Amino acid sequence: MADGDLSIGQVARRTGLSVHTLRLYERAGLLASEVRRDRAGRRVYSAWDVEWLVNCVKFRATGMPLTTISRLAQLVREGSGNEAERLTLLREHRQHITGQLAQLRDCLDLVDTKVASYERHLAAGGTGDPWQQEPPPVPGAHRHQVG
Amino acid sequence: MADGDLSIGQVARRTGLSVHTLRLYERAGLLASEVRRDRAGRRVYSAWDVEWLVNCVKFRATGMPLTTISRLAQLVREGSGNEAERLTLLREHRQHITGQLAQLRDCLDLVDTKVASYERHLAAGGTGDPWQQEPPPVPGAHRHQVG
DNA sequence: CTAGGTGCTAGACCAAGGTCTAGGTCAACG
DNA sequence: CGTTGACCTAGACCTTGGTCTAGCACCTAG
Image (cartoon, rainbow over all chains, first blue to last red; front, side, top):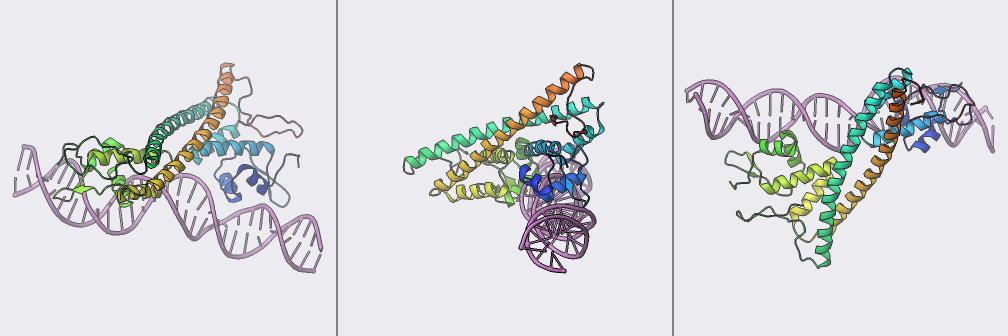
């Protein structure tokens, strides 16, 4: 066993995944290299496996589906010759990330506006116009605030 | 019917939600005001409802669960007096958003590094060291690149 | 030897968030 | 009048991504 080798429990602690999830990921083909086993059949993860898993966690955290990670892992497993396809996958995910960033910033704007307005409202002792509670109860009265 | 009123189909087109989802949201209590009905029992959305739904879409896109939106809607429905709780909900979601932003930026770094390395690799006609395909095949050979 | 901790597999279970179907109403168009 | 299109409800169904259980195998320490 090389010095970087870890048991599944250790990998779980290092990656933040549960051992159940680690096994699920393996079954789902997310690992770019076959996980070794010791004589008792227990998984032995290399430092490289762990680095890969950490990247998987980042991909997951940013919405990459298991199937896509699996596809990427497969390409890596297959070795040289498919770099263009890996690049495509990565570029697609990059797109996805920037889209999400935009949405998050958009929602952050909304939330900040609302938070500021509620803070003003509360500081003013309940006076003000935070989030209008009712839909325009008076037809003809336009210009309402929803957020 | 006020001039801003819309049918469910029109709201679906404007919000990007399906009519199924709109009905689901209503059942789940996401709407901050009771949706009116015409004499035939069909939903009539006000402009205010649509604005609210657009905000819901933003919340959903940034990971707010339906139950939380429902809670917020309930507070708004109940009217003044619970502004502090609304503020809490919003602040919590703000936290969530900034956390997600950090994760996205982290993953964006990773992806950018990988993309650049693959581009270099492909430009060099296949030479280089993009994403190491194999886990360290030679024990003792440290310093591998996983991503 | 035996108990505790950790691991194994197979497979059931679960929650969230949609999505779709069946069977029916209504209104407007030609 | 009949048919087309949008709408209604109730409820089944589906996918994703985990999470947990049962029943068993090791291994190490006491």
